[in-house]
Image 1 (tube, helix red, strand yellow):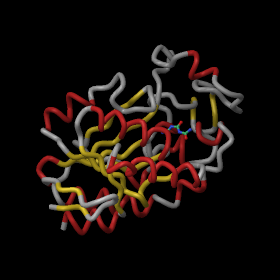
Image 2: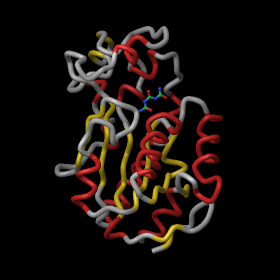
Image 3: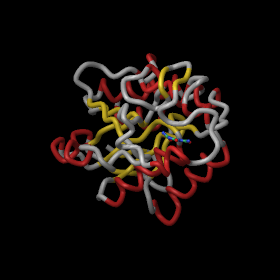
Length: 219
Ligand code: TIU
């Protein structure tokens, strides 16, 4: 199949393609979580939920593995560098109690994926302590086991965890395709800049396409 993508078409085999949905957690998308604690307007991110749900459903229907990630830390914060917890001047720091439980802590309500995009039984869910999903996780080994060559990306936020993971994946030899309307930033200009920089210089980091374009290639 060929994805009608930017900066040019991307050829891929459905048998070696996987979808990674990055950090669609209550902590980033609902009020009272980590994203809001950093001073962000989280309502912007809610707009991509329907398109992301369509992308996930289309991949499931096409037999493409769906992998979900969650940015979160162990309750004792042993996997949270002090530099990360101490950064900035947030209302609540990682590990502090908030309205959805302790901020960005595994197992707390805020760390869960939003119900609209919940993983189905058997789908891989990766808890990650970093912005990139390869760092300190088994994602690389898992993809090697699947034989994956092409990765479709969705999730939040475009310029932080999505872009970091795409760059990690690009360096590991994957062809990376970002779903333009299934990713969002708290800063619209950062999203636009990220789309531009990913596909610049002849797809230096990867490709971008709309959810409709991706789904029509899979159909
Ligand atoms: N702050 C921000 O834009 N993002 C994050 O901290 N994590 C993710 O992008 N998931």
